[in-house]
Structures are given as C-alpha cells and as structure tokens.
Amino acid sequence: MKNIRNFCIIAHIDHGKSTLADRLLEYTATISQREAQAQLLDNMDLERERGITIKSHAIQMNFKVEDVEYVFNLIDTPGHVDFSYEVSRSIAACEGALLIVDASQGIQAQTISNLYLALEHDLEIIPILNKMDLPGAMPEEVKDQIIDLIGCKRDEIIPASGKTGMGIPEILQAIVDRVPAPVGDPEAPLQALIFDSVFNSFRGIIAYYKVVNGEIKKGDKVKFINTGKEYLADEVGILKLDMSPRSSVKTGDVGYIISGIKEAREVKVGDTITTTARPSLDAIQGFEEVKPMVFAGIYPVDTDEFEELREAMHKLQLNDASIVFEPESSAALGFGFRCGFLGMLHMEIIQERLEREFDMTVITTVPNVSYIAHTTKGEEIFVNNPSDLPDPSKLDSVEEPFIKANIITKADFVGPVMSLCIQKRGTIVNQSYLTSDRVELVFEMPMGEIVFDFYDKLKTISKGYASFDYHQVGYRKSDLVRLDMLINDEPVDALSSLIHRSNAYDFGKKICEKLRELIPRQQFEIKIQASIGAKVIARETLSALRKDVTAKCYGGDISRKRKLLEKQKKGKKRMRQVGNVEIPQTAFMAVLKLD
View 1 (cartoon, one colour):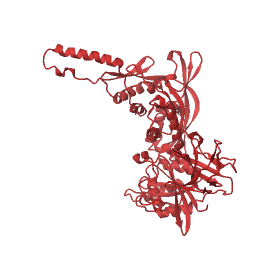
View 2 (cartoon, rainbow, N blue to C red):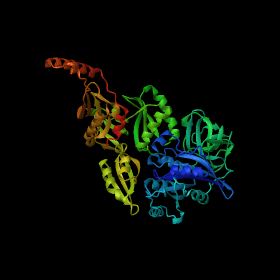
View 3 (cartoon, helix red, strand yellow):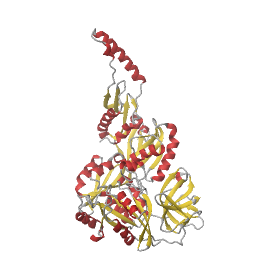
View 4 (cartoon, rainbow, N blue to C red):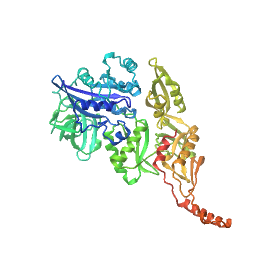
C-alpha cells in the first residue's frame, strides 16, 4: 500500500490538463504508440468535437523508481465551471492534486475554486507551470501569483510543457516524493467509496470506487450501504485504458465492480460498498449535495416515449450525478421532466447526450421555478408551470421564491456585478472585503431571475472570476404576470413564462422578434404575439411566401391580374384556417439566450 499514489489533475479551462495526462501515460508506457492519440482520456464524441473534458476519467499507471514499483491512479478532471461537481467527486478519491497553471495566462478563476476544493479535502498540492514552450509564457510573474495563492516555495513549482514533454520526469518524481500514500486499514471491514458509474448494455451498471479500508475480492457478497441492496461481485479489477480484471482490489487502490445491477436507481454516487460477511456499519462521509443553477423542462417530442425518456435520464444520471430531475406535465407537451442543471453549457451537453447516446429527441422548454398563487377565495395553489396559474380575475396575489446569493469576486468587478444583480431585481444586503483584492457581496434576489442566464452573465462580466453560491430564504409577494406567446392566435404552452410586470414588455418584444427570425416562412401570413391575459403587448408579422401567379399574364388588362390575385387571396385565407405552424427546437433554445 505504501507504493500507491492517488492523484488528480485540476486547472482552469484550456490550461492543458488532458495533454499533460497524455504525456504522463506515454512516459510511464501505459499506452503503446499504436493507442496514442491527443486527449486520449476524453473518450466521448462530444468531448472530442468541442475539445473540452466533460467527465473525469480514471486510469492506472505503473512507474519504477530505483527498482521500486509504484502504482499511480490518475484522475483527469474537467476545467469548465459547469462540471465542477465532477472535480469535487474526483478529489474525494485522491490524496494529492497536480495544480496546473498556464504560463501565458496565469491563475484564473477555476484554478482558484478547484484549488479550494482540494484544500478542503487536505490534498497535497503540486504546482505545475504548463505551456513553458509558448513564446508568450511569463514564468516569473506567474510563479509569483502561485506563491501568493498557495504559499509554496519557489523551487517547488515544476516548469513543464504538455506539448514537448518537458518536466514530465520531474512531475512523476514529485508525485512519488510529495503525495502521501493512502491511509487505511487492510484488516478492517471493507469500505469503498463510489465516485462514478457507467451503464453498459451487456454487463449492467459498472461502479468505480476507491477502497478506503479492507479489500474486495471476486465472488464476495457485497452490500451498498445507502440503498441497502446486496449483490455478488462477478468481476472486480482496476482501470487501465480498458478495464482489467483482478482477483482482488486492495486498500488504497481504485477499481471497478460489475455485479449485474440492472436498475439505475440502485447505484448512488457517494455510496459506500461493504461486504455482507463482515459489514462496516459506517458510510464514508465527505460528499456534498449538488446545487442546480438552471432549471428547464425536458419533454419527449413523441408523447409515447415518456417511459423511454425516464430510463434514459436514469442512465444518464449514473454517468453524470449532477443532474436533478422530477416528473411534470404540460398542457401542450404532455408528460416530461423538470430538470436542474449546473449551467447553460451543462444543459446543452445533456440534451446532446440524450440525442446521441439514447436516440431521444427532446424539447427543452423555458426554465422556470415554482410559485405560490393565492386566489380571491383564499386558496393556495402551487404553480410549477405558467399554464397552471389561475385566471387574473380570480387571482389575489402571487408569491415567488427568494434566495440569498453570496458572490465572491475580484475588487475590479464589483461595479458590473452589482449592476447585474440590481437589474435582476436584487437588493444588496452586505459587502465585505475578504482580502485587499477579493470582495464578498450578499444579495437577496428572486430565484426566477437567476434560472435563465444569470450565472453565465456573471461569469462573462467578471472574466470568470466570480463564484456564486445561494440558498433559498422562502417566498415573498411579487407583482408577477403570465406572459403568453400566441402564434396565429394559438397559445404555445412551452413558451409561456411567469415574469415581473416591469420586465414583461421588453421580454415579450424580444421573444417576438426572435421567433420571427427563427420560424420558417409559410405559404400564409403568420402573426406572432405576446400577451398578458387578453391584452397583446407585442406583435411581429411573418409575411407569406408568395408564388407569383401573375407571371403568365403578359400585358393585357389589369383585371386579369386582379382576378388571379383575388383567387390566390382566398386560397391563403383557407390555408391559414387549416395550416399549423411548426416551431423548430432552435426557437425554444433561443428564448434562453435572448441577450
């Protein structure tokens, strides 16, 4: 056990984590020349296309120092803030972390937030200055930043380059010297922490875990503490480039277990595995609950596919534990789910994965939150969907959920952050300087204002340096109205939203303009309206595609042309009565990105 090292790689987006991981794998001869490719651990098509890491990936390497064989368990993590939950789970399974900083960019926001995650778990941090081969590298200045941030010595920072392979031997040596071996009792009852799982259509659900105490053998009867279910360990092993079976996985090691679990709900990330013969009574602590930032409805295009969508969502949740969902229904779209995501990118990725991995075509509706409506008769109604809101004549008042938001940002961005929060109907409660350069702002604001694009805007105006955390503080009365979108006088349920009266006019106008761009033109005129109750507050008209019926009239009397045009007009009128307008999926998505 003293020769095992578990570590992860953390950094801001595009600071070269995956490239450096490739070099480590090549240097330790874990992969052959034939298997080598750029960003080897990013094995999802989406990750390859977008050039980002979405999932954390675990792999084991062997490394020899002075005739001692060391086992390295490496976890490569995503850098994008929408996938920070992946990082927090990987950190729970490690004793050390490589903190990578781009020598040309310096320390950025995710560097800091991932570092704090690692420090909370008492990991040993090895700072690495990556991309030293770039002409724009500023090694000395960036080293000063790193020393300010983590208080290490100057010679502890390893200069490296994932492209040229510079500094790789030093990094491996530093892992051996600085990262502590896992602590655990090989004789104690088995305790293993599940930090990830995947669904395999042939073998059932495969759980990845780190053994904290005891050991797990092939053929053991195991029990998952949280769910209380028992299984037989058909196969256990370690994670190389593919899974490689072993007879047992010992204390401190990272491995996988296949036990023929069919039900997605039976595996929870953060659960503890133990044996039924010598059970451990305590579960392993240290896993945080996930906080969704963006909420939206996901509905199957074909209403018969609801059950398949439910299965797909459960399988996806195995692989991405940060998605939260509960069933809901809508008048126009039938049954679907209300889902919570960590950000807009996360939402896009989930939608793409549903389409690619499970062949589900889905409609994503405008994000919303739950409100409480009070009727004139004194009843309380929970409103999950704008269409459930009672008629304005029967409505007494509406209460919306408020949150307390803590935003930590650099002093330079206090102005823009404040104006963003005030624009979103926030009131400032407190402002305090944590250091000369870091400010904490506390706001109270309506939850409904942050589910759209608040988080993305906050990241944009603060160049990524603002961290955002919130908790609910109950419901408060508000002047809310239901904004309906009508297309040829037919309301479109998926586009209606509850919105504050002061913002309704601007919002309605923007949506009308956006829909006019996105709805394909038809043979008849389409009118797009935004209305509050019976009052239309904005309108756009999409003119008809017109066939030139008078083309064959060459010269002659005007009445011949007039006759043809009148005939065409009648046809258009009839067409408008029977024609229905297809709204493309892009229109639903575009409403989320109005600004």
